Length: 209
Image (cartoon, rainbow, N blue to C red; front, side):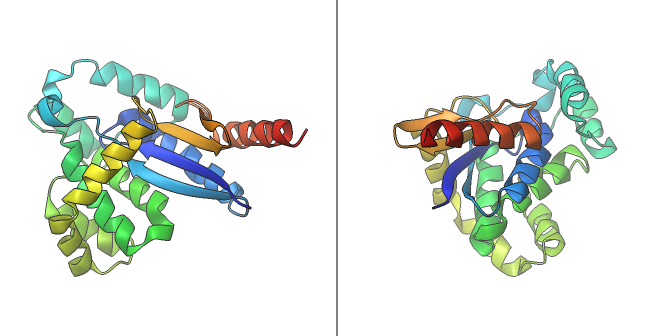
């Protein structure tokens, strides 16, 4: 029986951008024994939706993320930071992710990674329909269907936020391992794929003893 995990990320979370490749590597290495759900968190919602320029910690945080994970922050994104006016809206991003996930549920992690590259490397807005047409083409999905989903998937985004809250997630990224007694966090934002696999092995060994 496959081990169940849930990955809670926010497309506008720099640490998720850094952690994403590790999760992808972990999922690939353990494809035969895990079942991974990918869920959007709500980092920038309601009153927290604000211009990127109002978050002065971004530059230092990004430098730390690059140092610990090797993540790239491209020129398009750096231009948004320098300008300062871009609004990060997690609800719009989660709606777009839900549309992509609906079209390719078995490629949800790939879609999440593509979204974060679009923002953190190319500086594309995850609140614009045109970005999702670009992502659909990149992922070889039906672009019109994705755009229709983007226009109608608000409820799915809200459901993701509710699910993340019920799991007790308050910070992103969070990778949760489901056990008979509840969920436990697997790894840290700076963990590698190998670290995550080792953590899973340790848990499964402890359970079997």
